[in-house]
Image (cartoon, rainbow, N blue to C red):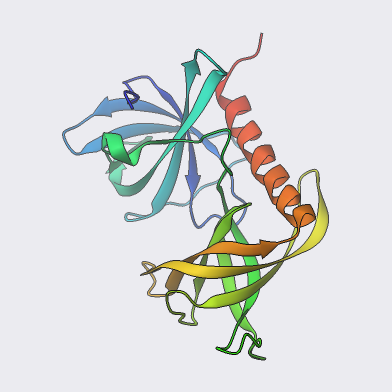
Amino acid sequence: MGIYPEIGQEFEVQVVKDPDQRLYSSKLSDIKESSFIIELILGPEKQISLTPDEPLIVYFVVPDRYYRFSLYEFKATILEFYEERFLKITRPTDKEISRLQRREYLRFYCNIDATFKLFTINNDVDSQINKASIINLSAGGAGLESKNEVSLKDVIELKFHYAEDNIRSVDIAAIGEVVRMGRSHEGEFTFDIKFTYISENDRRIIMDIADNYYRKVIKMQVFIK
């Protein structure tokens, strides 16, 4: 890929578990063998409480010959607090830094309450309603966290309500297949689903949500003359 942040690179940092999805301005202050030292620049309106092992999403913008600017991201974990205003976080490899492609569905990190039902073998929907949190979302699928376990290739009916920023308040429903599974730091089940059915209206709304979010990321990093 050839893109790797250098000392002085400006970042926007999101705490994965933050329900408000706030973005914190930051800067890469030093590069160690296995870690980054970053400085968090916090305004008085933004309060933040961090602990070691806290998962983060880090975004940065670089010039692009075709689009003027391109947005990149990588996942990191807080290792320790470093001096007074600095954090030591895990250092990504080249392969762990990904460009948010403009022709693909943008993934939007979030914390949205949701419910889901499992389909039975006969394609009937189980009547049990399970609670979950959507931790990332795109028009093509979602990542969820729940106390209820699922299995690979399970088909679920997902429902959630969204109301934020300039996106109109709306109820969204989709059907998806479980394609990946894991466990969170808190021991809850995590799983990714790929949408197998979603209305074009709901897909468009999710695309607007993601686009709105990343516009905010870029505005915070790019000075427009």
